[in-house]
Length: 223
Length: 67
Image (cartoon, chains in turn purple, orange):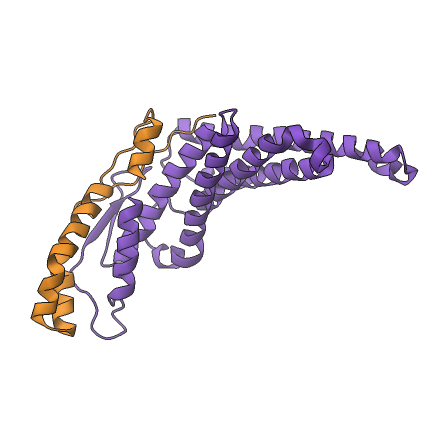
Protein backbone atom coordinates (compact mmCIF):
# COMPACT_ATOMS: atom_id res chain seq x y z
CA UNK A 1 0.00 0.00 0.00
CA UNK A 2 2.87 2.40 0.77
CA UNK A 3 4.38 1.56 -2.64
CA UNK A 4 1.15 2.48 -4.43
CA UNK A 5 0.84 5.68 -2.35
CA UNK A 6 4.27 6.76 -3.59
CA UNK A 7 3.27 6.17 -7.24
CA UNK A 8 -0.06 7.91 -6.67
CA UNK A 9 1.77 10.98 -5.31
CA UNK A 10 3.91 11.06 -8.47
CA UNK A 11 0.82 10.75 -10.70
CA UNK A 12 -0.83 13.54 -8.72
CA UNK A 13 2.14 15.84 -9.29
CA UNK A 14 2.82 14.93 -12.93
CA UNK A 15 -0.75 15.16 -14.24
CA UNK A 16 -3.18 18.04 -14.12
CA UNK A 17 -6.27 17.05 -12.11
CA UNK A 18 -7.56 20.61 -11.73
CA UNK A 19 -10.36 21.34 -14.22
CA UNK A 20 -9.84 25.08 -13.67
CA UNK A 21 -6.22 24.89 -14.85
CA UNK A 22 -6.30 23.96 -18.55
CA UNK A 23 -6.64 20.42 -19.88
CA UNK A 24 -7.06 18.03 -16.98
CA UNK A 25 -7.33 14.25 -16.67
CA UNK A 26 -10.87 13.13 -17.43
CA UNK A 27 -12.78 9.88 -16.98
CA UNK A 28 -11.08 8.45 -13.89
CA UNK A 29 -13.66 7.05 -11.49
CA UNK A 30 -12.23 6.29 -8.07
CA UNK A 31 -14.70 4.80 -5.59
CA UNK A 32 -14.03 4.21 -1.88
CA UNK A 33 -16.25 2.98 0.93
CA UNK A 34 -16.45 4.04 4.56
CA UNK A 35 -14.81 1.46 6.86
CA UNK A 36 -17.49 1.90 9.56
CA UNK A 37 -20.38 1.69 7.07
CA UNK A 38 -19.17 -0.30 4.02
CA UNK A 39 -22.34 0.51 2.06
CA UNK A 40 -21.52 4.22 2.17
CA UNK A 41 -19.52 4.90 -1.00
CA UNK A 42 -18.22 7.98 -2.76
CA UNK A 43 -16.76 8.42 -6.25
CA UNK A 44 -14.34 11.14 -7.31
CA UNK A 45 -12.37 11.98 -10.45
CA UNK A 46 -9.02 12.45 -8.74
CA UNK A 47 -6.06 10.32 -7.72
CA UNK A 48 -5.96 12.45 -4.57
CA UNK A 49 -8.91 10.41 -3.30
CA UNK A 50 -6.71 7.30 -3.47
CA UNK A 51 -3.91 9.05 -1.59
CA UNK A 52 -6.28 10.29 1.13
CA UNK A 53 -7.86 6.85 1.67
CA UNK A 54 -4.58 4.92 1.39
CA UNK A 55 -3.06 7.24 3.99
CA UNK A 56 -5.97 6.41 6.30
CA UNK A 57 -5.51 2.65 5.79
CA UNK A 58 -1.76 2.87 6.25
CA UNK A 59 -2.20 4.93 9.42
CA UNK A 60 -4.58 2.28 10.82
CA UNK A 61 -2.10 -0.51 10.04
CA UNK A 62 0.84 1.38 11.57
CA UNK A 63 -1.23 2.34 14.62
CA UNK A 64 -2.34 -1.29 15.16
CA UNK A 65 1.28 -2.47 14.93
CA UNK A 66 2.52 0.33 17.22
CA UNK A 67 -0.07 -0.62 19.86
CA UNK A 68 1.06 -4.26 19.79
CA UNK A 69 4.74 -3.36 19.89
CA UNK A 70 4.23 -0.93 22.80
CA UNK A 71 2.96 -3.85 24.93
CA UNK A 72 6.18 -5.86 24.50
CA UNK A 73 8.75 -5.34 27.24
CA UNK A 74 11.77 -4.99 24.97
CA UNK A 75 13.67 -1.86 23.95
CA UNK A 76 13.84 -2.96 20.29
CA UNK A 77 10.05 -3.43 20.19
CA UNK A 78 9.46 -0.05 21.83
CA UNK A 79 11.78 1.60 19.32
CA UNK A 80 9.93 -0.04 16.42
CA UNK A 81 6.62 0.86 18.06
CA UNK A 82 7.67 4.51 18.22
CA UNK A 83 8.65 4.45 14.54
CA UNK A 84 5.30 2.94 13.47
CA UNK A 85 3.35 5.39 15.65
CA UNK A 86 5.37 8.29 14.17
CA UNK A 87 4.51 7.12 10.63
CA UNK A 88 0.82 6.88 11.55
CA UNK A 89 0.80 10.32 13.23
CA UNK A 90 2.57 11.83 10.19
CA UNK A 91 0.07 10.33 7.70
CA UNK A 92 -2.90 11.53 9.75
CA UNK A 93 -1.26 14.96 10.04
CA UNK A 94 -0.93 15.09 6.23
CA UNK A 95 -4.61 14.10 5.85
CA UNK A 96 -5.71 16.80 8.29
CA UNK A 97 -3.45 19.61 7.13
CA UNK A 98 -3.06 19.08 3.38
CA UNK A 99 -6.00 17.10 2.02
CA UNK A 100 -8.94 17.32 4.41
CA UNK A 101 -10.44 20.41 2.71
CA UNK A 102 -10.93 18.45 -0.53
CA UNK A 103 -13.04 15.78 1.15
CA UNK A 104 -15.43 17.58 3.48
CA UNK A 105 -18.40 16.67 1.23
CA UNK A 106 -17.57 12.97 0.99
CA UNK A 107 -19.75 12.00 3.96
CA UNK A 108 -17.43 9.33 5.39
CA UNK A 109 -17.43 8.87 9.15
CA UNK A 110 -14.01 7.24 9.50
CA UNK A 111 -12.14 10.20 7.99
CA UNK A 112 -14.01 12.89 9.91
CA UNK A 113 -11.73 15.42 11.57
CA UNK A 114 -12.49 14.49 15.23
CA UNK A 115 -11.78 10.82 14.50
CA UNK A 116 -8.49 11.66 12.77
CA UNK A 117 -7.67 13.95 15.69
CA UNK A 118 -8.33 11.16 18.19
CA UNK A 119 -6.16 8.71 16.23
CA UNK A 120 -3.31 11.19 15.91
CA UNK A 121 -3.35 11.89 19.65
CA UNK A 122 -3.41 8.16 20.40
CA UNK A 123 -0.35 7.70 18.18
CA UNK A 124 1.44 10.52 20.01
CA UNK A 125 0.45 8.90 23.30
CA UNK A 126 1.95 5.58 22.15
CA UNK A 127 5.22 7.34 21.20
CA UNK A 128 5.55 8.89 24.69
CA UNK A 129 4.47 5.65 26.36
CA UNK A 130 7.30 3.78 24.60
CA UNK A 131 9.72 6.59 25.45
CA UNK A 132 8.67 6.50 29.10
CA UNK A 133 9.04 2.70 29.35
CA UNK A 134 12.48 2.90 27.71
CA UNK A 135 13.81 5.45 30.21
CA UNK A 136 11.77 4.68 33.34
CA UNK A 137 14.69 2.81 34.93
CA UNK A 138 17.13 5.66 34.20
CA UNK A 139 15.55 8.29 36.42
CA UNK A 140 18.71 8.86 38.46
CA UNK A 141 20.79 9.22 35.31
CA UNK A 142 18.42 11.51 33.40
CA UNK A 143 16.62 13.20 36.27
CA UNK A 144 13.23 12.27 37.73
CA UNK A 145 11.71 15.53 36.50
CA UNK A 146 12.52 14.58 32.88
CA UNK A 147 10.90 11.15 33.28
CA UNK A 148 7.90 12.86 34.90
CA UNK A 149 7.69 15.28 31.95
CA UNK A 150 7.59 12.34 29.49
CA UNK A 151 4.79 10.68 31.50
CA UNK A 152 2.90 14.01 31.68
CA UNK A 153 3.16 14.40 27.88
CA UNK A 154 1.85 10.85 27.35
CA UNK A 155 -1.06 11.63 29.71
CA UNK A 156 -1.77 14.88 27.83
CA UNK A 157 -2.04 13.13 24.44
CA UNK A 158 -4.16 10.25 25.78
CA UNK A 159 -6.44 12.78 27.47
CA UNK A 160 -6.77 14.77 24.24
CA UNK A 161 -7.59 11.51 22.41
CA UNK A 162 -10.23 10.68 25.02
CA UNK A 163 -11.85 14.12 24.71
CA UNK A 164 -11.82 13.99 20.89
CA UNK A 165 -13.22 10.44 20.97
CA UNK A 166 -15.99 11.35 23.43
CA UNK A 167 -17.06 14.25 21.20
CA UNK A 168 -16.86 12.12 18.03
CA UNK A 169 -18.87 9.21 19.45
CA UNK A 170 -21.74 11.46 20.53
CA UNK A 171 -22.94 11.44 16.93
CA UNK A 172 -23.81 8.16 15.20
CA UNK A 173 -20.88 7.02 13.05
CA UNK A 174 -21.56 3.34 12.46
CA UNK A 175 -18.38 2.34 14.31
CA UNK A 176 -18.87 -0.93 16.22
CA UNK A 177 -19.55 -0.73 19.97
CA UNK A 178 -16.57 -3.01 20.49
CA UNK A 179 -14.10 -0.65 18.77
CA UNK A 180 -15.68 2.37 20.43
CA UNK A 181 -15.29 0.82 23.90
CA UNK A 182 -11.74 -0.29 23.15
CA UNK A 183 -10.72 3.20 22.02
CA UNK A 184 -12.31 5.01 24.95
CA UNK A 185 -10.95 2.53 27.53
CA UNK A 186 -7.47 2.73 26.01
CA UNK A 187 -7.34 6.52 26.02
CA UNK A 188 -8.97 6.90 29.44
CA UNK A 189 -6.94 4.26 31.29
CA UNK A 190 -3.62 5.30 29.75
CA UNK A 191 -4.27 8.97 30.51
CA UNK A 192 -5.16 8.10 34.12
CA UNK A 193 -2.09 5.87 34.51
CA UNK A 194 0.40 8.39 33.07
CA UNK A 195 -1.18 11.27 34.99
CA UNK A 196 -0.67 9.35 38.23
CA UNK A 197 2.89 8.36 37.30
CA UNK A 198 3.78 11.95 36.34
CA UNK A 199 2.46 13.34 39.63
CA UNK A 200 4.22 10.66 41.66
CA UNK A 201 7.51 11.34 39.89
CA UNK A 202 7.15 15.13 40.27
CA UNK A 203 6.40 14.66 44.00
CA UNK A 204 9.56 12.58 44.34
CA UNK A 205 11.55 15.17 42.38
CA UNK A 206 10.42 18.11 44.55
CA UNK A 207 10.83 16.05 47.70
CA UNK A 208 14.48 15.48 46.74
CA UNK A 209 14.92 19.21 46.11
CA UNK A 210 13.41 19.96 49.52
CA UNK A 211 16.34 18.27 51.20
CA UNK A 212 18.56 21.17 50.07
CA UNK A 213 16.13 24.00 49.48
CA UNK A 214 12.99 24.58 51.59
CA UNK A 215 11.47 27.08 49.14
CA UNK A 216 9.83 24.11 47.32
CA UNK A 217 7.65 23.17 50.29
CA UNK A 218 4.50 24.60 48.69
CA UNK A 219 5.06 22.52 45.52
CA UNK A 220 5.65 19.35 47.54
CA UNK A 221 2.41 19.92 49.47
CA UNK A 222 0.60 20.56 46.19
CA UNK A 223 1.72 17.16 44.83
CA UNK B 1 -4.61 -3.18 24.95
CA UNK B 2 -6.22 -4.14 21.67
CA UNK B 3 -8.16 -2.02 19.20
CA UNK B 4 -10.13 -3.71 16.40
CA UNK B 5 -10.18 -1.59 13.25
CA UNK B 6 -11.20 -2.46 9.73
CA UNK B 7 -9.77 -0.84 6.62
CA UNK B 8 -11.46 1.21 3.94
CA UNK B 9 -12.02 -0.70 0.70
CA UNK B 10 -12.22 0.47 -2.88
CA UNK B 11 -13.73 -0.88 -6.08
CA UNK B 12 -11.30 -1.81 -8.84
CA UNK B 13 -10.75 0.97 -11.33
CA UNK B 14 -8.88 1.54 -14.57
CA UNK B 15 -7.11 4.84 -15.00
CA UNK B 16 -4.59 3.78 -17.64
CA UNK B 17 -6.63 4.87 -20.68
CA UNK B 18 -7.49 8.26 -19.15
CA UNK B 19 -3.87 9.00 -18.28
CA UNK B 20 -2.57 7.79 -21.66
CA UNK B 21 -5.14 10.00 -23.39
CA UNK B 22 -4.06 12.96 -21.26
CA UNK B 23 -0.38 12.42 -22.20
CA UNK B 24 -1.39 12.08 -25.87
CA UNK B 25 -3.26 15.40 -25.73
CA UNK B 26 -0.29 17.17 -24.15
CA UNK B 27 2.60 15.44 -25.95
CA UNK B 28 2.18 12.86 -28.73
CA UNK B 29 0.84 9.37 -29.35
CA UNK B 30 4.25 7.67 -29.18
CA UNK B 31 5.14 9.19 -25.79
CA UNK B 32 1.68 8.35 -24.50
CA UNK B 33 1.92 4.69 -25.49
CA UNK B 34 5.42 4.32 -24.04
CA UNK B 35 3.90 5.03 -20.62
CA UNK B 36 1.10 2.49 -21.00
CA UNK B 37 2.90 -0.63 -19.61
CA UNK B 38 4.19 1.24 -16.55
CA UNK B 39 0.81 2.84 -15.84
CA UNK B 40 -0.77 -0.62 -16.22
CA UNK B 41 1.54 -2.00 -13.53
CA UNK B 42 0.72 0.91 -11.21
CA UNK B 43 -3.00 0.33 -11.87
CA UNK B 44 -2.65 -3.37 -10.96
CA UNK B 45 -0.75 -2.45 -7.80
CA UNK B 46 -3.53 -0.01 -6.94
CA UNK B 47 -6.28 -2.56 -7.31
CA UNK B 48 -4.34 -5.05 -5.22
CA UNK B 49 -3.47 -2.55 -2.47
CA UNK B 50 -6.92 -1.01 -2.14
CA UNK B 51 -8.87 -4.25 -1.79
CA UNK B 52 -7.03 -5.54 1.28
CA UNK B 53 -9.24 -6.60 4.18
CA UNK B 54 -7.71 -6.36 7.66
CA UNK B 55 -8.78 -9.20 9.94
CA UNK B 56 -9.03 -8.53 13.68
CA UNK B 57 -6.63 -11.37 14.38
CA UNK B 58 -4.20 -10.50 11.57
CA UNK B 59 -0.64 -11.49 12.44
CA UNK B 60 2.21 -8.98 12.65
CA UNK B 61 3.66 -10.40 9.43
CA UNK B 62 0.34 -9.89 7.61
CA UNK B 63 0.15 -6.29 8.85
CA UNK B 64 3.73 -5.56 7.75
CA UNK B 65 3.10 -7.15 4.37
CA UNK B 66 -0.09 -5.12 3.88
CA UNK B 67 1.61 -1.83 4.69
